[in-house]
Length: 287
Image (cartoon, helix red, strand yellow):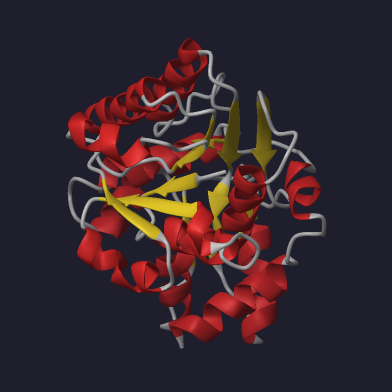
């Protein structure tokens, strides 16, 4: 059986491949990357490194040839680009007669109004249309997404948010990677949807946990969206990113990430890393 991970040199993809290599022979593992030279380390381990560009469908035909189980890691970029790229990848998988597709989606993808949802919704629909057995890994939120806020707190700034009392199921990216690896290499995941969410917390609760880790109080400033945008601009966030992060705060405020599930624990076979311990890991990586 041959399995392939797309985007294997990205942050999540790297962790997925590292996890797989602990239990799967390198000879059974292939990766599809835009720049194969970035994956020379994997090639040296015996992983089959293939060139595949989501914007060049003909490269995907070669990349996916002979693959039994495929993990499509969602691409980065604007909505239109991501929809096109995800569709290209799914259609190439169908042409290659791949036997199983796992896809890293977003929380509650089929119903959500989250700003980032349309590319995931398009990908899920495209996968369903193929009739290929699938697993949708609906990732809630990486704790690593909060690194810039944690860095601000370490520098003496308050925790700033416009999300009010909206809750998020934060977890470490490593744990999302382990869940994806478990599905790709495991059995019995055909035609499944997993809502991968950590313990639901508000911004205040996350900041409080961070304060416990740092041994100091972390003040939380709840502001409106306009003030949040102004603050993000003042700390150097690029103009084109500001509407995205404001939209995410709005989505959290409206409950789009407030999804309770124990799917994570089922896939990992263990409890998630407690939030204080997870924050401690991030803080030690920053400082």
